[in-house]
Length: 71
Image 1 (cartoon, rainbow, N blue to C red):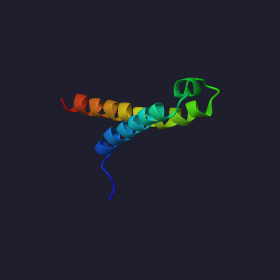
Image 2: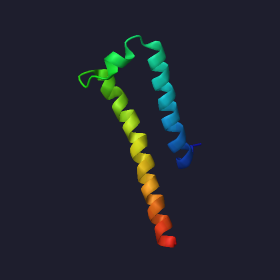
Image 3: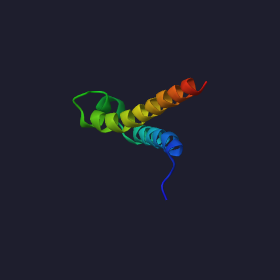
């Protein structure tokens, strides 16, 4: 059974944030290693964080258009 889209739009960013906080607490050189764009760590976090943000704002725009049309 798949999760619904509203559940996923809330669950995925929370899981990613929890993973980011866990990594920050475990990894000793986390801030220095992940802030440089030459680091592989930077790009490994860029895509998983960007996709849910894009989906959230895309859905937010769609809901705004729907509400504007029906009112």
